[in-house]
Image (cartoon, rainbow, N blue to C red; front, side, top):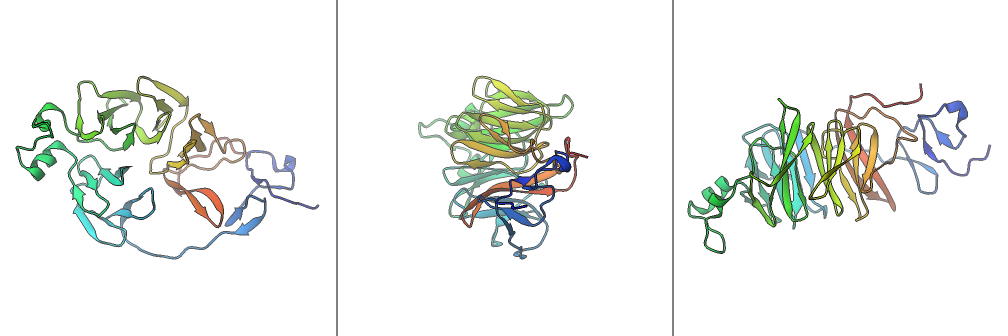
Length: 303
């Protein structure tokens, strides 16, 4: 049989009913836009150690990691001795990288220098009399970034931070004042979602909020459910231009907005217990690549 192009991987259909142009297993190969197969590139070790978090800036020029209890550049320049081993989360706006693990937080500027984020840290950095441009003490008129938050994200000129309330199984998502990322108002600037928020990803049409069992879109005045299944913990969202944002769920790769599952019709894999994913461009190809910590159960594969 003459196969002119492979259509991809399919493990949800009876192999006896598939055409020969489908693959039921595809290890260590790339499927090109033309439908041809090529061996994937290999890997080489560039660093080793107890790494727990990594973040690359949108322009790919800077990379930050948490190694043991030190926040540092990828090249190994230490920036901050951390006081907590909680997972680190990141958000970027105007070339500044915000980081937060619920205890340690701050801002990394383009020259790798650090700045404070919480109001208490601002007072310590600039003095108890720290005042805004209008002469008022901003630190007493508003609240600070809440402790015990974890996932953070920037969307529509505000910074968002999620705080899970395990006893009642819901998450409060706090958001800052517009263009004032260190100023929060805990009386009014928040919304709540059921379950534990594991991911927040920005899109022009809404903030995509992934929990352990649902996916939502927050659009400033209300929140809509997009899927009745959740996301995998980790830093795995990636913007595909202005049209859509890709992210990894318990049922494979999804995109929003609008929401669509890109893989469920053809591929079902164990989603992992944590994931790191991004869009990679190499050799004229564009791929979403995800690295999984093994675990979880595949949803509805052919057996």
